[in-house]
Image 1 (cartoon, helix red, strand yellow):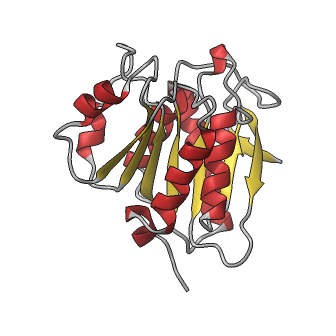
Image 2: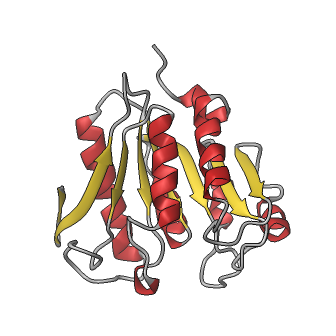
Length: 213
């Protein structure tokens, strides 16, 4: 599937749930220059969790990755890619609340766009790389949109204690789930990460955002 953008198109995959959808989501992948794609395991499993919670979920390759046109633009141009993905999703599901987020680099880009976009009602961040001095997540305090952060306790780019400190005082809109014994990629702990995402949108704060029939 291809999503049209100014630089050409984005390669994308949409997974729809069984039954009536309750919302729709975009999940962004990790750093394009370090092997990140929409097929990265954590992205795939997070999308799976969202679909299981009743949300059609869109994964896509940022510009210059896979069959997507364009070239890497240091996270700036990639914001336009996220907006294009949200535009496509909103057109397909015009009456459903949108969720936006991603994993690692994708969390920074997805959350930046998701906070600014009025169509997005809920946010998801996986493996926030808070140790990277080039990435400032302080903007998470500038919204009241519900946000789920799932972090590996032993994440090399932001451990459980480090992420708890970084998010401390930002607001009650943030729910932090720390996965024991998990690294940045949630190796051997992908099921726990998936369960955290699915639970948040099935029965946790995220469920309140969705359309239930």
